[in-house]
Image (cartoon, rainbow, N blue to C red; front, side, top):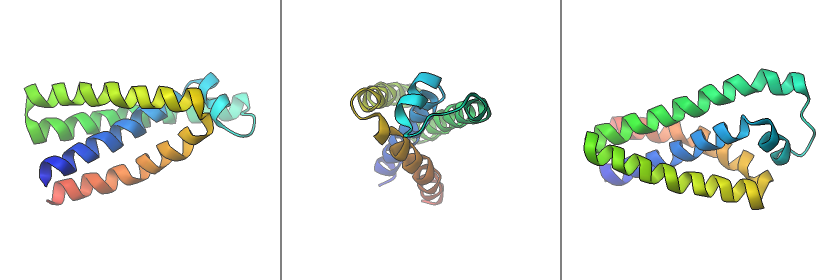
Length: 120
């Protein structure tokens, strides 16, 4: 149960982190939002999205290393990161407007799953 919960948490946090990092780029942000993003609005949100993306990836790596150890944990993390990045690239290429709700859902569910992982 713990291994499955840690894997699910790893995937959710990884997708949320990579989605946030992808949306911090102006070209991807403009493709994925329905309305035009102004320069001021983009400059305000960009650093927050970068910090959120990197912190979600750091939390994901901390969870997987604590669950599996350094060797298998890092291999699992980078395998998951490759798969999640491929999924984010596919979403931003074919369905760019789906990336924002999917990333927000992962950002919302990720801390909840982390709490369950810590408790159990």
